[in-house]
Length: 187
Image 1: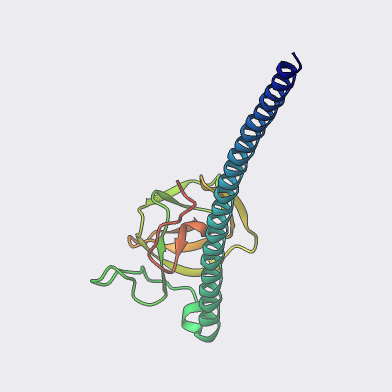
Image 2: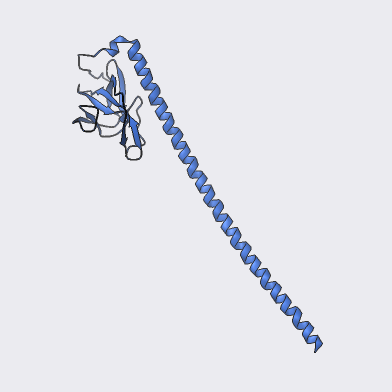
């Protein structure tokens, strides 16, 4: 009888050890899976942060280029008295579509409104098409206005321009640029 008791105890001990071992394997497998999911989420978040940072850098570069171009236009107007005096004639486009004399700006928002005064409540003179050319009239408002463009809120001054058909009015600063491009913030 003593042989049966000795043979029975090692079987129970072996069974308990196997159960603990299997429990340990299941526990470690679940921890490994959780860690892999967390690493994947961290990589995705780092990628999104890098993309957001790249977009912010691009936006800052565009703003700096716009500020540099405006400063150059103002400096040009100060050094060239012909540009700072009002022009009495109507600007006519050359055969290439650009204006004779003065600085040309390109429309960066399709359907941009040229208005009679530098605010949203004034009446619309003409709707401008994307990449249409207008002439900068060397007048910019002293203050800026925050306007929602769809993807972002721009805070820009109003700019006085002359249309190719001779009409003069005001456009929002985020809607024109010295280079032909499309404003990435506009819908």
